[in-house]
Picture 1: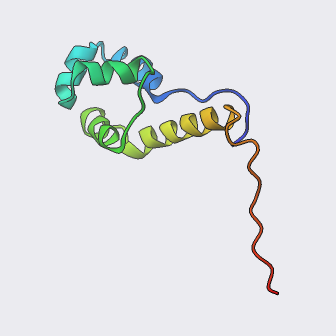
Picture 2: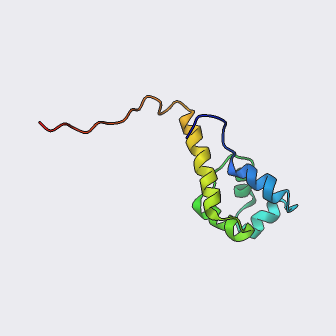
Picture 3: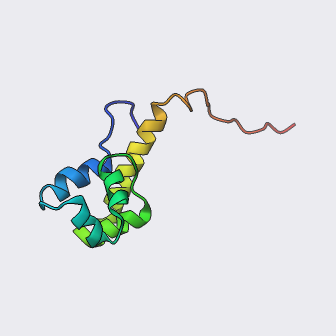
Length: 99
């Protein structure tokens, strides 16, 4: 993955492209997904990620494939780690040479 622009958090997609377009409140959507308002609010406000279970709930609730949500989350997570500097010093590990 390139270090360019930060990928969109899946919560932003949920907020802008689903909830706003459907004129749904977080409370109403949370009820339909059978999760707490707090859980959905944390995702929509980009303070929590999409789990596999949530991706399946979103697929069943809104008809958007679970793999779409998980792919967005994976891209977002990878970008964050790559740009954190925490793994920059790690290099490929060479195999042991036979003696």
